[in-house]
Each structure stands twice: as C-alpha cells, then as structure tokens.
Length: 342
Ligand code: SF4
Ligand code: SF4
Ligand code: FES
Image 1: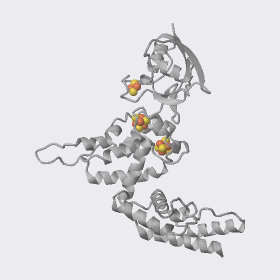
Image 2 (image 1 turned 120 degrees about the horizontal axis):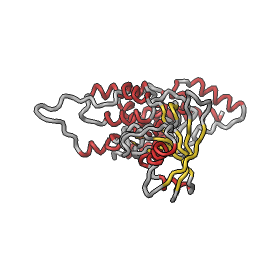
Image 3 (image 1 turned 135 degrees about the vertical axis):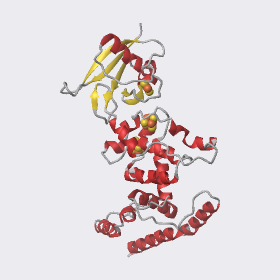
Image 4 (image 1 turned 180 degrees about the horizontal axis):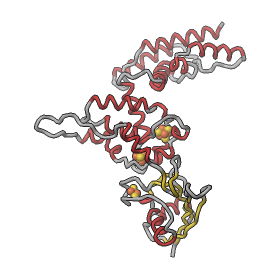
C-alpha cells in the first residue's frame, strides 16, 4: 500500500522544554487529505496528537496549519498533491507561525475575537426603505463577493511581514472585512466613518505591501489590495494627516511632477523636516557624494508633462491633479539645481 510520512511538530508548553518532530506512517488512498491523515494518526497511532478541525469542508477556517512551510487548510489539501509538488513522501506539518502554541498544531487564536470586536466586523444596517427590503445589485455584490468568503483562518496573519516586525498592526483579515463592510450600501454612513477611524488607529499604513498574505489565502482573497482600498477611502474622506497618507501624496505628486519618487524630499513631505533634507544634501556635497535624487529634467519636459497630465485628467484617466503642488516641486527642483551649479 502507498504510504506518506507525516513529520509532525509536537510541543506541549506545560510539560516540554522544547518542540520536537515525530514521524508517522500514513496509508494513503486517492484524494485523502492532510486532515484525514492527521485524524488517522489520532484514531490509530497516537491519541495524544492535538490539532483543530471542525467543518472538514473549507468553511470554518479552523484547520489551517503549515504544510511544508506554507499555511494551508488541512481539510482541503490532498496528501498526494503535496507529495507530487515536493517530489517527496515526507510532509512536514507545523502550527501556524506567529501564534502562541497551545499544544502541537493548536495555536491560540483568541486575538481574532478581540480584533473582530475592535474593528466592529459586522454589518450595521441603515433603516430599510419604507415597506420594503434592502436590495443589493449584482454589480455591488461583485465588489465584495471575494471578501465575503473570508473564513478567518488566519493564514494571512501567520505570514504577515508587518506582524513579524512587531509593527503595531492588526493583521490582514481585519482590513479585508473592513473593506467588505465599507463597500456595502446597506450600512449606516456614520459606521463607515467609524470604520475608517478604526483602520487608521489600527495602523493601516503599516502594511508593507509584501503580498505574502495574497499568496497564502485559501479563498483567493487579496488582503494587500483591500488594504490599499481602505487607505484610498481614508484619503478620500479627507483624513490626510497620517504619515502614510502624506507618503502616498508625496509619491503621487512627485511621480506626476518628475516621473519618479524622490527619497530626498520624502522625509520633508511626511515629517515636515525640510531642515533635515538641506542638512543631508549639504553633508552629501561635503563628502563628494552625488545627490542623485535630484532629477535633471530635459529641456521642454515640464511643458510636455503638463500637457500629458491635463489630457489624462480631461479624459478621466486620472483624478484631478493639484497643479499648485506640482509647481512647488518644480520650484524645489529648480532651487536645488541652482544650488548644484554654484
Ligand atoms: S483573508 Fe484569507 S487567509 Fe486571511 S483569514 Fe480570511 S480567508 Fe484566511
Ligand atoms: S501585504 Fe501587508 S498585510 Fe499582507 S502580508 Fe504583507 S505586510 Fe502583511
Ligand atoms: S476543518 Fe473547517 S476549514 Fe478545514
């Protein structure tokens, strides 16, 4: 009979000094999943093995574990598929990273409940129209259909670079759901406003856009994209004072003005430290270091750029551009170049 070897992470923090891995031989038949393999171990080999599972159909999100280093739902992962993918009969099964281990493959997910409460992650409906029910158009549903599928498996949190760096950040799934409710026409406007405040206070700008959450979500949701959409909603609502929003505005203005991001002026635009920039440029020059972040624009570039931006705005391809800001950038560059020529 064909078999697979499960190399399973074992650790009981109450009795063990450190974790260890234990091998189990599993008979495999076509289509058998990792969860069925774990259940086989528990029923036939080792009843002390601890893991979580409930629905067995990819709905409850409780069986997420690391399978050969990647978070996956054990109930939706066929053993043979992993053996083929890694050309090996040995499969390493570990608990999700970044969570406290309760025992073996079971991690502490209590924080999820706290996040759901803190983010108000449920729909707060307006009064429905008189003598009628709310109707939601298919076009609207399409906007947040994927996000509605989130099963709170926490796979995204287990790989999140912002969480790894201990940056105060609430994890990708919270923003997936925030976006989902923000896009729902049935929700009260004042609650949407509150959602933006909560997202701001929960460090929505700390996401590094590493895209790891996108790569592991078993429901093919793209949390990183939803974070961008929440950020956009925050900026559009007029909340432009956070460093993240200022950074975004710096990127946009400088890209429109010069075609590139300017790392010299980033701190000045975000933290209002014009003095630090001047000091930095002076020090570079004193040490003969090229201040390459000052773009040398070819003759006629600025006039051509303005024409292109105006055409794009008129055709509705980009949002209205604040030319005053772009002019300011032109002036900064001119001043810097003059300084260089001295
Ligand atoms: S966004 Fe995806 S990975 Fe994150 S909790 Fe929801 S279903 Fe799981
Ligand atoms: S893109 Fe953002 S939310 Fe997603 S894993 Fe990276 S840092 Fe975390
Ligand atoms: S057991 Fe519910 S998602 Fe796997």
